[in-house]
Amino acid sequence: MMEENEEQSHGQQADLSLKKGNYEEEEEEEEEGSFRLHVVTWNVATADPPDDVTSLLHLNSPKSPDLYVIGLQEVYSGPLRFVSDTVFDDRWSRLFMSTLASRKYIKVSSIRLQGLLLLFFSKLEHVPFIRDIQATYTRTGIFGYWGNKGGVSIRLSFYGHTLCFLNCHLAAHMKYASERVDEFEYIMDTQTFECKKAPTIVDHRLVFWFGDLNFRIEDHGMHFVRSCINDQKYNLLWSKDQLTIMKKKEQILQEFDEGPLDFQPTYKFDLNSDTYDSSGKKRKPAWTDRILWRLRPKASFPDEQDGNGAGLDVKQLKQLEEDEEYPLKIRQDSYTSIMEYSISDHKPVVGIFTLELRKMYTTPLVRLQPEGDWSADIDSMVLYSPLQPFPSSTWDWIGLYEVGFTSVSDYITYTWVKDDEVAFNEEVIQVYVGKEEIPVRGAECVLCYYSNTLQCIIGISEPFKVHESKVAIEEGFVHEQINGLDKTTASEALWN
Image (tube, rainbow, N blue to C red; front, side, top):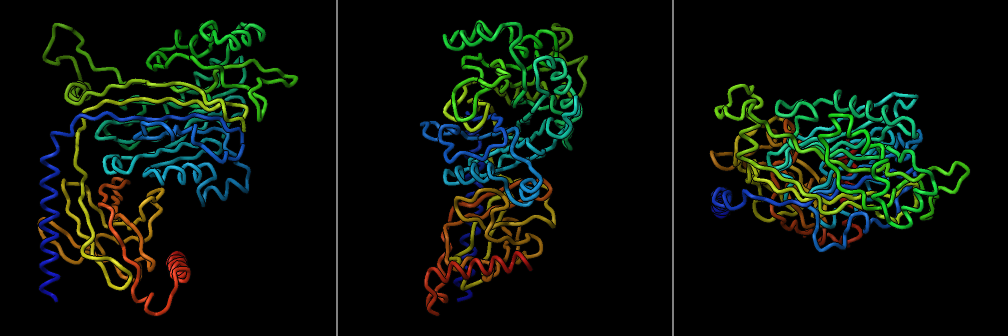
């Protein structure tokens, strides 16, 4: 029996090494990539989420995004709700996570600042290539808006290209256009990251800036604005849009691009209707909700005749080399509002983008797979093989996840890589998983290697079957009791 196990283990180790070789052979074929990005911004005005977000996420579209980035403003943050949301995911996050999990997306990162919420989702296949994830926030305090206004951001490396997503809620009211720009500049100046390659927002290769930016339409009267909207002559309003006006004055705004505003202004509506503000205040419609982007300007030589890089510092030279060797292009495919949602006085805005890039790496850092058959009746082993050097840590762990999991923390169980290591050679390392940790009822699962240093998943196994416990069935447990047994085991593990 021992010989059979050794043969099986050697066979799987050889298989793991073979797959490692296959990765290297495929590397050249997969260098060029085209990726679809779906960005949402929505001021939800403290409302609870709708029952259905199919239209918001374009779930019926024949082209599914590779990445979803969802920025919300004015998520309800009353004292009791906010405390519970700090312990458990808020209602909006749970809705998006449950909706997207069945389509093989997971929440890679999120950040919350009172009413500001930013969520980043990825198709599972890209997750091992999303690294160096960090999130931060900035409060702005102009005119008493401290705390409920500001910016939250998530930065990361996507196949080696640095991306940053910034969700803002800026100061309100018509007369504060300059203050909005000041707030934006303050956020850009103060947000920093522990990343040598991109320590500030502007150092990133590609930045998306979106949110309730609160810029209004100046000069034109209410009647003219509403007539233009009714006649769909939105272009007649563009020249008086405050963001368009401020872009002519402010260098930092000129670096950001935006698609044409070929949709009706998204603020302010009566609740549960498509009627603009009919209250006594009769606020003028405006494009307060926006999505812009900035592709980092290419480093250029001070003298066009000088082709040897003289005059450029080391950082600029590295950027120039990166731009040439690993090009990145962006195209906006769609920019529109979703009018059917009426729970808020704002309509959500969606931007669809295509990113074309040359990948800086095409293999995950780790390859892993289960050894033999898995069930709660026997102790099991994970085999993993480092495919590239990476900063391993005693806090690295391998998680067992059910297919369709929602986020990194949604594991069934996990094992510490260093503490539970059983055997290793130059190619393959074995890690032990105790049978008491494996689900009694069985499931379709995957294994994920989480790097504590890189703060991300760096390897995912192919899906495999964890079999239902034969011992539990022989002892007379029915399916309902088996499910209950798993829940009891999970509860005990949580409290212990």
